[in-house]
Image (cartoon, rainbow, N blue to C red; front, top):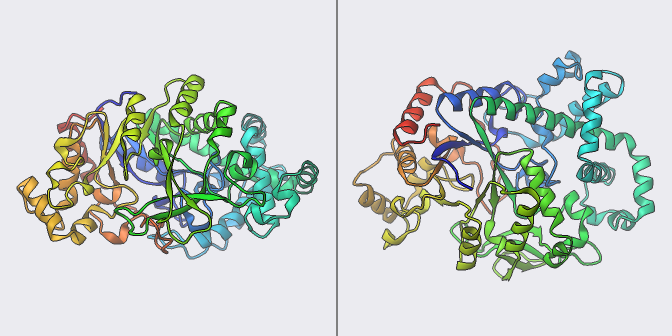
Length: 502
């Protein structure tokens, strides 16, 4: 895969402004696309779009295939007769700067339930054919997901491995009875997914018409409490009670002295290989319905994953266990052709990871915030002059501090290294833009900047602090009026000057 020299902006849709407490796939999303086009950007990068659970992380979704109901534009549903003015009579006191996921869980669930009730009562007749076609086309994952969510509600939100054993173990009779008992509830889940995909598809078409493509995310692992793990239990390392025997994470690194204990179940690669990695093929096929370019998160897990015995309190006690990433990617290519993938190859990268990336000519990643640490920083692979052409360069990612925040918290050694390398002495006000310019001037074909850096925001606007479930993770939103024509023109000028303008 060859990416043309270009650039883009990283912003998760939950961070869009709007009057319903969270970003939606409506007018503000289209306005953001318009601004990207005005600024000369080719890509909008988002995080995983799946339905989030505990901790609200996009990387811990209830399904690897489903969309996040929180993002559905409720105003559009009102315009189509699925919601009425009375449904909006008692709006919660939404905050403009942060997402309150607790409020969203209660209020938005009620609103989408009302939309389905109106549909079941005969409203939105123009949607019936499309809904039926969607149900048929997506049945392979949609039916399991709908039943999973309905059963989860019936069990008070408990994870699937705490359900009644006959449902936990998917006994045929128990599943048949549940489908009959929960028919209305499962239809509601399927209808809400139809609404999400309908709106997201329309937004992608809007973006494509304006020269903007979407970079999306495949987290390499799925959540333990997910329909994927429940419906495909034989493909994961579980015991006979549905408990994982080992879980995923990473050893101690830049972000944490005790490593990161993610808790995701790990794959039984030998079982997956028996059917030609069919689940992975379908996962990529589903992602291509959402994204133009796929960032494969924690790519190194396709060469080897850090397996931590379950249960554990930290990620320190683990081991690297090889994975058949080469065979899996070959199977995906045979089924789908050349899939456009960015390999997130950050962290502990070994020769086998580099070989896997390079055998498939996948662009890797570089983060400029990582370039200036240590004493002899001149050998750092992330220094601008060391970057490769087939690479994607970032000032920072969703897991980093904002660039302004990074500079404020940088050690004196890091500041000294930066000043020495750039022959400059940036201020808090100028550093983020200087790092953006540095990224755009590299030889890397694609440069991506988080919107927080373009807005020169500090640590308070950080998206995520890895290894934590802090109250501000994933909640940041930008404000109406932040995306000015002047900022668009400044970014467009830099994009043109560095040969990245489409």
